[in-house]
Image 1 (cartoon, rainbow, N blue to C red):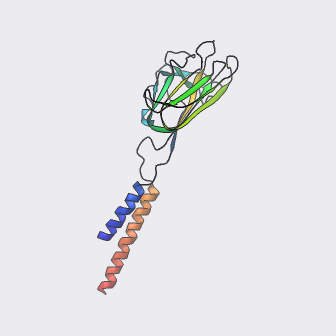
Image 2 (cartoon, rainbow, N blue to C red):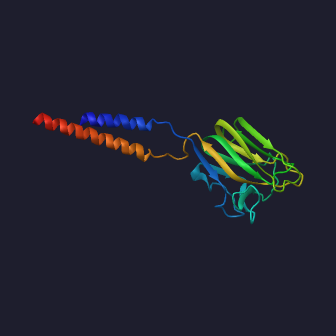
Image 3 (tube, rainbow, N blue to C red):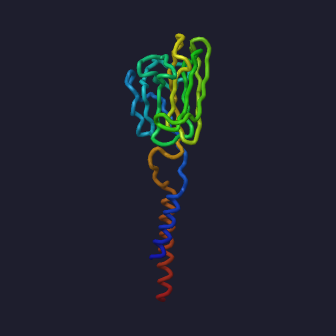
Length: 209
């Protein structure tokens, strides 16, 4: 029995040592309340927003997944790099992307940093549409080994060209919450222990005979 427990312990340790799989979280913002600040609404998924509010666009715009998106907390559809929408992460992310809706000549930019505040810039990407951006939508993406915060805004805050954001995606290096050991692996471990116990019982029976 002692031998069985030793083997089971080694196998369980091996399961715990398995590398964590990357986890992608996608937010379409359709679960919010128009006019309310987003804040920590998605904190259980490892994401907290700052200076962002939900906005309802009625029937939706091209590029949106539904009718809800987010813009700046002031209610403005125009905001620049000095007053960005900020998202911070409970643990390091390796990729972050967002869709800019109605992006025109004032553009869209996302910048990644390695700390919830301050820190070092890791990556940035910007795009530009034409005119006031009606019907134009673009995805911007940043990647890095230790993204803890992104800042999102227009490249320029003046010009009469507004935009909003939708379909926010974050890929974490590991799950934002502790994931249970897969059922299949636990089942395999239990089955192996049962076989070992059966083998030991049969061996003892033959010894008695």
